[in-house]
Length: 480
Image 1 (cartoon, rainbow, N blue to C red):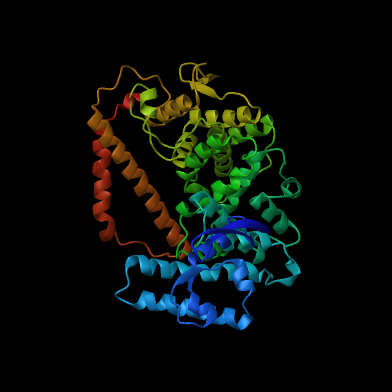
Image 2: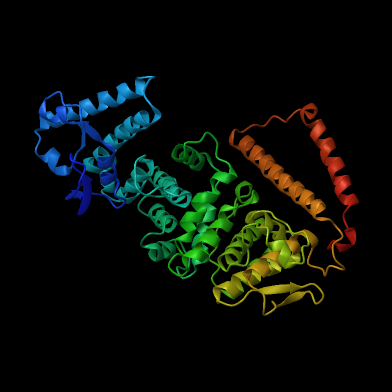
C-alpha cells in the first residue's frame, strides 16, 4: 500500500513523498533511522549527513545502492566498536543497523515450507514477523504479544499433526482455537454448540492445559523457554478466549476481564488430571453436571470450575485481586488469591459449587448472578445495590471466612491484616511452585523419591505453621 509520508531533506526542510508501508508504519520508521554521508551518493569526500527519501534510492543504480548499504553497515560497526563514541552516537548506529533489516523482511514476501498449505499460515506468519521486529512506531503490548505467541503455538501444533488429522478434526480444532473465521462451522464439527461462547473458552483452556510431550515441546520452542509451567499458559488462553467477547464488550470491560484472567485463571488440577469439554448447552445439562460434581467426579468438577470461572469473570463478578475490595466488606480480610485459586476453593465447597453452576446458567441468559444464603441454604437474588465489585468482594470474603454469617466485626489491626495477607500470598505462591515441581517431575518421568533428609525441615515448618494458624482461627465458623 502506498501512503503519503514526510521525510527530511538535505536542507533540513520537510518534504512529502509516497512510499510503501505496512499497517504499523514500520518502513517509514526505518527511513527515519538511516542517515548517510553525501559522499557515499556522489563519490566525493563530503562527510555531511543527509536522510534518504524513496526518490533518492530510485535514482541510484543497483550497484550504487548495494555499495551504499555496505557503507552504512561499516560506518555503524565502526562507531559501535569505537570506545570513544558517545552513547548518542552508538545508539544512532545501532538503530541504523536495526532499521536495515526490517524492510528486507517485509519486501521478500512469503512462501510456506509446506507447499500443500498454500497461504493458510500466512496471517500467523506476518503477525509473528511483526512481533520479532525491533524497530517500529507502535510497540506491541503484552496482550498483543500473548496473542501472537498463542497463534504461533496453535500453528505449530497443527503443522506437526498434534491437533488431530490435518483435514478433519485438526483443522476444526485450529479454527476454534484461533477464532478468526469459520469458528461456528468448526465448533459444530467438534460437537460443540457454536452459540455458546463459553464452550469455546472452555475448549481453549482444555487444549492449553494438556500435559503431553508434543504440546510442551511446541510451547517451549515458540516461547523460547526451557520448561513449560502453569504460568506460561495464562496469557495465550486469555488472548484467544477474549476474541469471542471483543465485539460485545466495551474496551474498558475487556481490559478488566483481561486483568482478571492474566492474574492466573488456571489451577493445577486442570493440568494434572485429564478432562474433556462436553457439549453442555442447556440448563438441564448444567444441573446434571452440578450433581455429578457433588459426587466428587473430577471430570465434572473440572468443567464446572472452568465454565463457572468464565461466567463469573466475563460478567464482571470476579475480578483481579485489588485493595479496594476490603472496603466494600467493612475492612474485613478477604482472600486475595488469583482467579484460578478462588474458583478452586469454590469447587471444594457445596455452596461454592452451587454458585458456579448457577452463574453459568444466569450468565448465558443475561441475568444477574445469584448469591448463596447460608441460613436458608439456597441461592437468592443478590442485593439490588450490589455491583460486580460488591459480588467479587463478598465472594472473596466467603472463600476466606466461609458463607455462614459473620458475627461481630474483626478485632484485628491493620498491621495484623497486612501480615496475614502477606502470609496468604506467600503460601499460595509456594503451593503453585510445589505444583510446578510435581509437574516437572512428571514431564521428566522422575520416579525416584526425594530424600526425607532434604525435606525434613520443610515438613516440620509446615506442621508448626498449621499449629500456629489453627491457634488464631475461629473453628466454629468452619463448614462441616
